Amino acid sequence: MSKAHRGKGIRDQFAHGRGECPVCKRKNVKILYEQEAEGQKFKICKICRAAIKHGKKSLTVAVAEEVKAAEETAAPAAKPAPEPAQPAKPEPVETPETESASEAAAE
Image (cartoon, one colour):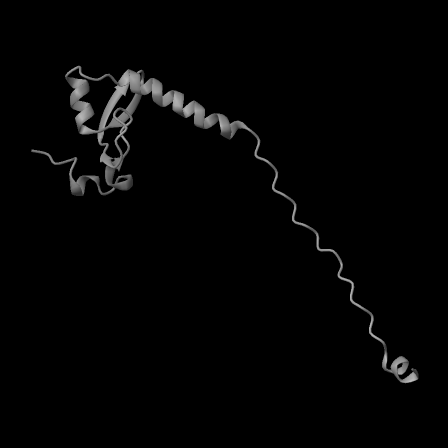
């Protein structure tokens, strides 16, 4: 039997195949199983894959939530970034004039 979703088979993937499942929102689980919904492919965890297969969950709800979240995160990026503050220009420092040796001797 194949062991494609275990150690050696997932070492070449980003973070060894771990991340956040878009369906159940659990973090640091293996998201190795591809599921297609509305023309897009998503990688989901093993438990959600089984739940979708048995009709207990649907990926379309998760897709709608993910698209909505993506739009919310993209909206602030569309705003122009504020210009960085200009560094303060150093003002010339006035040094007290020192009396020359000849002036000091004249007094």
